[in-house]
Image (cartoon, rainbow, N blue to C red):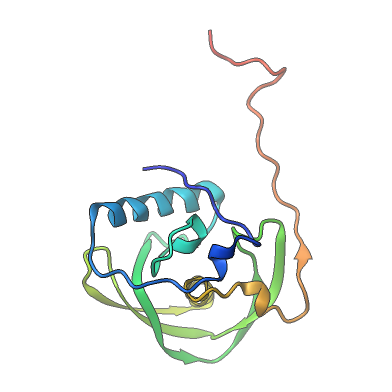
Length: 169
């Protein structure tokens, strides 16, 4: 497992549609592990394969409910209501904006074993599913922002080295 580079706004790959996954392979399995590692390392709750440079229809989501999701070839089959809220994106660091999303979504996909699953989400999970699936079609949340993007303060990286010296003896 490894941390992959997250592609940022301006990288052409983020605007390209992704291809379906036809079969689970060792490389796809490794990609999924790497996507989770990358997402957690960056402090995100969702990540789509094109964000790490792979044009495949794969999304990982973990909205902190101890039920991390792998969605392969996902599609939203039902929506209901509306919610408006702030969104950010690992591919647009330091920015956020208000986006309208469905309040409830139903998504059909394949899981990591290539078995069909149906996921119903509300609130943050619904927003995350919509956001990540947009990535698979080359859409960024900034395209949907209601009142423009604004800067957000990012937490500074913790520095474990007091005076520039390692604690190694």
